[in-house]
Image (cartoon, rainbow, N blue to C red; front, side, top):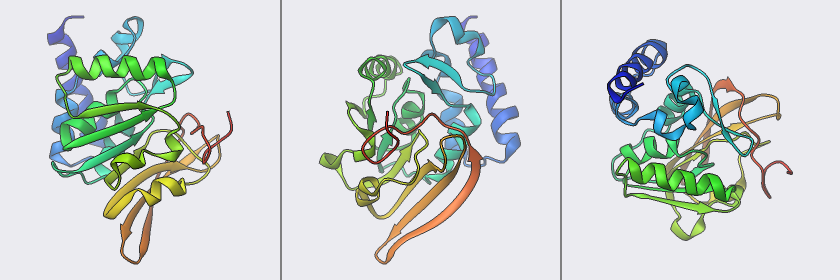
Length: 216
């Protein structure tokens, strides 16, 4: 499939899978039209890049369903000046979407091979505002805290306290939380008085492994 065909598929994905299901933020929709999802998928699966399901990327991980990427990004309410922490870089697709919308993105990935893959693909997209770190994502990355937004792309038993501590006042954190078999998206907004919590849709993510997540 050539780049023109991929572009047509990408626009169809946004129209039929995302906008038609209620995602309204115009900046999010534009980022999804611009970032080439097929860049972030192994070559043997690229023909499925714009279908409405996760895709295996190696190391037991997946690239999330496009709709899930869209709704999680919309929940973050990103501004162009925001500093964002992402937990679970994976192939780098969600990272690239965040980088297209925010001022700075720090992404933590526990698999070194995936981290390197993501760095290469993000660079190929011309994005220069991303730092990919190899480490335990449940501990966040305190060196660049506080963050205006934090996105967790794996399902944990709860929202890690370390991540909550690294959220700025007024910041938003979105995390799938619940049993390993199924979770719900949790959105926390930090105020001077604490955290306001909202619950969004049900979901199923790969497990969040780490000191404040699930055991390996």
